[in-house]
Image (cartoon, rainbow, N blue to C red; front, side, top):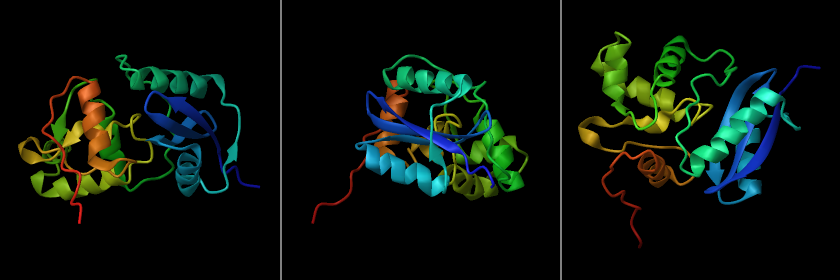
Length: 183
């Protein structure tokens, strides 16, 4: 039988998060959502067939670091082991580059493309990589902004508002995020 991976839910100051792993590497991370069932559904969409289990020491250390992060402690995930399978080659390059962004450091989709010698016309592809990022926070896609300082999109629970809160937690000033229209 193929190892579909394992996962664990854990509470943070902002909700219930989840981490999924295969072997010793993080295969998926779900940012905090309001409820455990919502978070569990999200992690299982990314790791179908995974079983809930007690994490090995290395994964437990990342859980502890994530809990501290959402409490506002300056935490970096540069050394967190990842096992992302085989993302498209350009996406893998984007993920590797973005993993190098530290606490409070932001960039733009176009700047990431240029840093990868892909040219700013590939900014949309960088955005697609960020939208399908299997391990947000570990691969800090919240630190990648739209041109002109706009917050850009965010597919995690809470959308752009969650991205803004994470940036504010890191001391990055952000413009108010429009919540949508109330008809």
